[in-house]
Image (tube, rainbow, N blue to C red; front, top):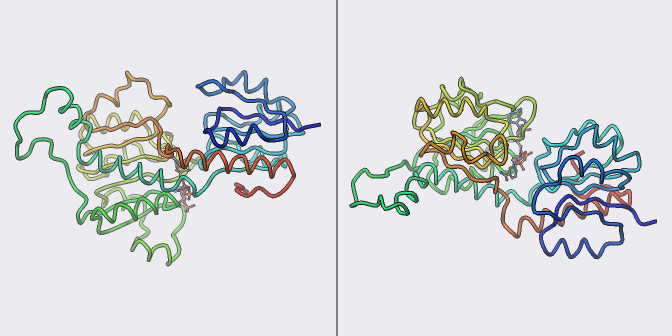
Length: 323
Ligand code: NAP
């Protein structure tokens, strides 16, 4: 009997075509929205493999519903805070993800947010589009630049390093970072980066980029106390996960002018309702979680996820495995 595979979205065209060529029974959610939880819980029953996205919560309830034949879960993302990893592992289910392939696109977008926030791009676009473009003025819409500034990277992983490398090309002269572990001399030498305590990063950085995973330790890491310690001119960018920032505290910090400019690709919740207070700040630039959104990257991510599914069905080691 052909194995059953549940895919929770329509994939980018090349990988979708490849998916349709496979020799398995395909159950696929093809709507232009994420699969509702009740539908997911119904469709998961009896499947051998699950191809999911970060929009699906993979927990004990879902794994119980799936049944003991489930061999592999592969997420089309590098972040896996939506997955109860211990629950999956304890059932001997293989677990795959998509590291590396989205590093460049996400780092590009993080830099775009940093530059956009620091150069007041939201106000600039609004001024041009809304007839507020007056005569050229010496200080009108002036932002700040990165020349000789200090960059603080929270989580110097794949994306954090790629962001630091890119921002050095814009004049950043000092890179400091915080995280769970001090990186090897090799990594530090590549960026001339220095490991510092979190508080030092907060007080000494001109630009802060959040590139760490969302975990129990990093949840709400950026609260009012953290924002209060930052330079009043800081450019704060989060392209990792919304849950790392205590959003009400970010609103308060913006209201009290504790922060120079903010760039967010991730929020809580997602989508962030258009009436949310965060949109009202001219110095807060918000994008709808598009860090990895290039067609090249998305095809690669989908393809890697399919590779993981195929390996898992054959009971082979996954090529891109979380454990
Ligand atoms: P990675 O190479 O695994 O890097 C993750 C970093 O998080 C590591 O440096 C790790 O530090 C750090 N970290 C883990 N726990 C921490 C803690 N308690 N305190 C501080 N730092 C901690 O992953 P990546 O490929 O760079 O991706 C990073 C994150 O970006 C993903 O988890 C995902 O949530 C997010 N992301 C977002 C988008 C988007 O579309 N906006 C796209 C891709 C990824 P250690 O090295 O010390 O363990």
